[in-house]
Figure 1 (cartoon, helix red, strand yellow):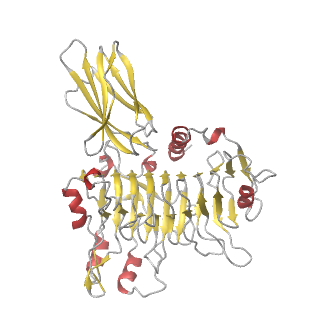
Figure 2: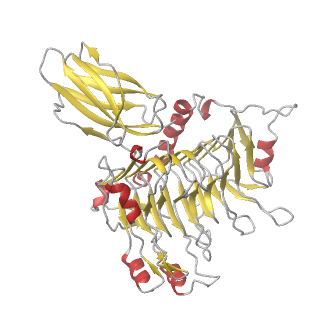
Figure 3: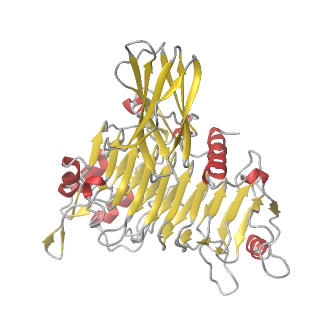
Length: 532
């Protein structure tokens, strides 16, 4: 089992047990789908019903054979029932899902999701079997659904890998690679996630690699749309992004930490349009919520310990033309929220990192776009445009030397970016507070973490103590506190924390232990993530 598969298994168990209360996939009814015919996966899923039309078992997992290709005869659409698709156990190549062209020469997007959905260990390409390119690989078209993408490889997309058409969606993407989004001749599209201005409950994106996109990793929208309750971007590698990397304009709470964001905005931005000077797009975009019942000062945005680097070769090409300029990290609009303390920006660096075997710069494509934007057949920006490395798992290596500052610059001292390339797991952050005597009191963290909605804060004592836990939001405001509890003995102890009253997000917590009969106390701080 690879490190990426191991972390995926842990995350799936967390989602299955903690978030839904259901039995994880390994204890559910399974249906193995053999790759016997065109559209067989569509047929098996749609036909898995009783004689009266009800689903045979809504907790069914559809298992695909490793190394097999499944051509889809139409969009897989789960209207009114949850759907789970996984690869069979083992270390072989991921099963491949590909849109198939029907007798009329037409093909459809891979998925139209209308209920909860999980996919794990699968390679999905949006190049159909006739060579055409489809759009919106995962189109999410129902309110209040939960979408989980785990340890997948997503390749080639015309518009956005994930397009959200509905409200209150929860989207979790972890341990996944997504690349080659957008049309070379029309770079206005080419995204990972496009919320289309809809209200999103939770967007949890961790330990992924996204590269070679003509537009953005995340587009949410401005004005009345694009409200995001909670955004979590942690330990992702983002490389060669045509425009703004992350649009977190209207987020109530956002955590952007420990990422490599390299060469975002490589297409530059136009200084003028229709003769009028334009405000340049930033790498990270923040804007006003505009909600009368939610004051701006109640927002919490953390942008910490990321590497924002832009290659000098791109800069030179952009500066050689009068049509576009290099994107700033933040604009004056962003600075309003930073200066007001709504957005905390700290610990970020700028460093050129050489990957062991990275995809390289797209200078030929950029040169053509800058000098001949009307060209309808520009050089390809995509990595592996001929598909020689499909599914591409052995063709790249995003590790980098430990001599780089980025190698130990995360909040916990780990490498920045997707840690799957390094074969290590994310270490939860625990920051010591004042007055610590490590041999007398030790904080072991909270388990589970992430959690929903309860967790146990675990610690070690060497003497009788009174202990309490206080929880704070990222602005330092107390949101929850436990009653002080007395522990008469030493050893490992724990305090149960019920966060049912809180919304999804990252929180700080402080454990205070006052020794009984002595005049000293110990304080430890940690971080916890609540995902509802």
